Length: 404
Image (cartoon, rainbow, N blue to C red):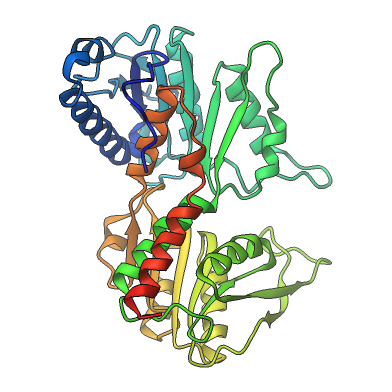
């Protein structure tokens, strides 16, 4: 997967990583993988060993120590505890980590996405413009679902992106954005060269999900007679088409007719649901979505699939938010509505979920570490972003194992 030539490429600047407290575990995994990769390169350097040491390939830690203390009123500040002058700084943030707490007026409060985003901006401000370059890795794009303005309402995601670039952030990396068109809010600045937004859309994630599904379901046939890809709504059809094309199977989708004359809890209620696709009888289904929030949409879709005769329903979602808890999910599993749920570790995952029989956590730390390493060497990320050939190899190997 790596396309870094350590002998022919130089670092943009010494690498440093700030993993905010809301994604500390992910940051530590990424840090360790980069350490191991660079120590290996150093051990294989031979006569170039001294020049590799000059580029700090022998470091045992790339993480930067920082603090975000709070006053009794809940106001905060950021303090960076070591020098970052002239470095290539990567800041990793999970703005939907609801497990982070702080004290305000003597009471314990949960940190909201707004609190997390403010801490991210505090850390950038604490840098004081001293890093050579700042890249923000925000796997779940802050306010990504508030990306379109209709009538008199805010356009939060676009505003947030503009704030970051105005503060000196050169590149913002996110995964599976709700609507990639929001990057139009920060076109490349003609004089400063800032405002590049790199979207790691479903292509790399697709490879990780397919690999995990193949490993955990060795008996599952991969052909159009036994497998089908389904999107729970029309918004995810592009994702489903991509999976179906690579696996050589058919796809289907649900069409949801809504009553746009009324609004309930901020949404237009669904009047009816129709499935568009081939017969599902006896087929295994991979049900795809970008996120599981309350889980109601994905459960309703899985229930409809089972009613239509699906043998197995495997749910794959980039972000497992589970904002309404796990009770309904557990109940649906007990009823046999779905068989497994796969989500990534790009956002906070509670320990309770990790121990669920139906749950599989897909680790993306190796992929992010490779992105950081590649950008730090200022080499092309095209091979990393396009995982099509690697997915095709997985499928080919699986078909060979099944004698096809």
